[in-house]
Image 1 (tube, rainbow, N blue to C red):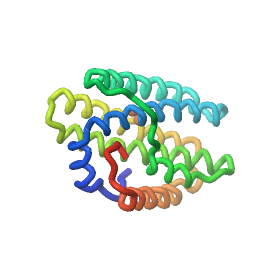
Image 2: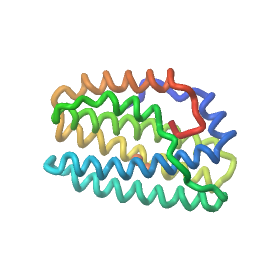
Image 3: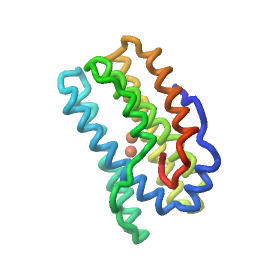
Image 4: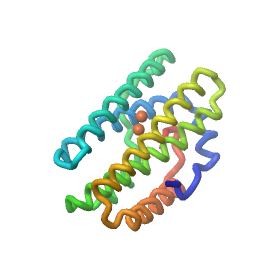
Length: 188
Ligand SMILES: [Fe+2]
Ligand SMILES: [Fe+2]
C-alpha cells in the first residue's frame, strides 16, 4: 500500500533544524502508539487474533518509547506535556462509530499513521548528521513499516467488507491533511 502524497521538503528542513523538538514529539508518538494498541485490545476483545497482536504491538511501542526517552535524557531534554497531534486527531475524527465500521476505520487509520511515520522516520534516517541517530531512525522506520502491514493484514482478516473503498477514502483524506496542515517540528 502506498501513501498518496510525499512529505514536503519543508518538513525535513524544519525537523533537522529543530530536531530536539521533533525528538520530544517522537517520544509522545511512541507513548500514544503503545496506549492506542492497548485501547484497541480493550475495545475489540473478541475479534480473533486482535488482542494478542495489540498486546505485542503495545510492548514493542513501549520499547521504542523507552529508547527515545533514553535519547532525550542523553541530550538533557525532558518529555514534558504532550502538545497534541493535529494530523492524527484529524484522521481519528474520520472513524465511524457503528462497531463494524469502527473496527475497519480504526485499523485503516492506524495503518496510514504508521506508514506516514515510517516515511518521516526514514527521512530522518537518511538526513540526520549523526551516525548513531541515522542508525536509530533506520531501525525504527523498519518497525513502523511492519506495523503498517500488521494493521492492514488485520483489517483484511477481520473487517474485509468494503475495505478497498474505505481505504481509498481515508488515504485521500490522509494526503489532504499532510498537504494542508501546517508543517510542525514534530513527527506529523
Ligand atoms: Fe514505534
Ligand atoms: Fe508503530
